[in-house]
Image 1 (cartoon, helix red, strand yellow):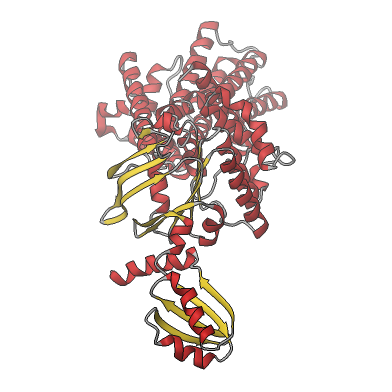
Image 2 (cartoon, chains in turn blue, cyan):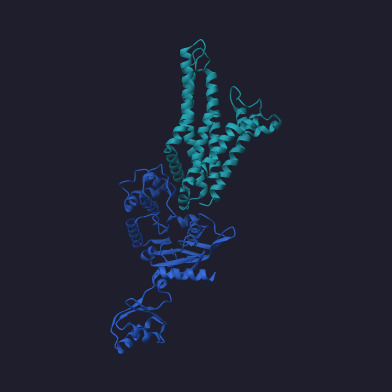
Length: 307
Length: 260
């Protein structure tokens, strides 16, 4: 099916006078890891809470797995696993008992998935210990196991790597990729740009409750930027030569060469030709690739300055 | 929802309550423990000084045991267990994770009631069993409770504890706070309800106090602290039903509308 697994239109949530989510429209394709990026307080968790029926929207419509929410909430959530903020458990029960509790709510067929889910997240050795004795990382893994009880088509994970050490983050990332490889969709909310860039194929950036940019990670990172790093001999002469070129918007010296801001990204070869014709030996010529982080800061700071 | 799912959800709730060892220990103490102590002390006193202390059993002591269970310590156990069932999902934050399964929220509330009742009734019946055994076993020369009176008393105590337990589930689900619910209910049961019963100018308005209504249904001796108030059995049942319905409705409504 080609219809988005998550589709929202004009989703809005107000808390008194404050608009936490302001007309959010999203279309998350199936079978990918999709990032939902934003600063703390940007509206990520509120959006997720509305999607999951944890709080009611003030305006807008939502569809999950093709089902309208909240009208067909039960059908929509039947194969959705979610961790909102941090997974919570009954600390006086073991990991397995916590899973049994949720399996009972989901339905009889769910019990058969418990052992597989435990195995999948690697908790089998300590699953019969009380959750109160678990580390943060173990609780996150148990949270994922709980999601897997739904045999989810869609996993909604809100800041899933919070509190994890680097090894835990890497493990989590691999787990997410393995879910995508199985054809599941992962909707990953995070304020960690690096996390989204390394894990997701596409993302939406939310700022002050509004979607400010959305698309494939490469497109998002690309933006409108075109810069060039040049390493060469005779740097002063190279700077004088290129600073006046009509293709160049700005030029500056760096310790190892020059950094140019270009009108268009495809002018690097022409600039290289001019340097070589002028007798300047070029040892490095590299287009600067914007990171998602730079793009994120660019779009969010643009909003801040406009405000 | 299928019957199988409902039963599994009730069993899951039962597991959750039973595994809360501190709550279970306190509830067991307030029911079985207190009755064992009551009859135990009576038996020891009688053995030590039969001239001064009568037998620990018999119908009089059984009647006192039923009051202990219905109005005093047993009611605390019922409140404790009901509150536990009503608040734990919310206070632990697990409510959110249960809601995202898509299961109808009214069912999430509905399974709390039978689970809390099963645990409460289990302890209550155990305590009543001990009471009856002691009433017959330690009767000595005193009259023992007749079968009809014993059955009526058991039913009355069970009804009293069930009422408080369900009210506690409702209030707990309404507030989501164990501390607030326990304070309100214990405060009502131990202090406010009795004070109101003593304010004579309230007249028959005091009929709406649950303990007064319960007292009207009590077999045998009248309850203490009812200040001579009486009402028809029908009115008493109606009062108790309204209390029950009001708190169940409030708890169900809040479970359905609460932001998770």
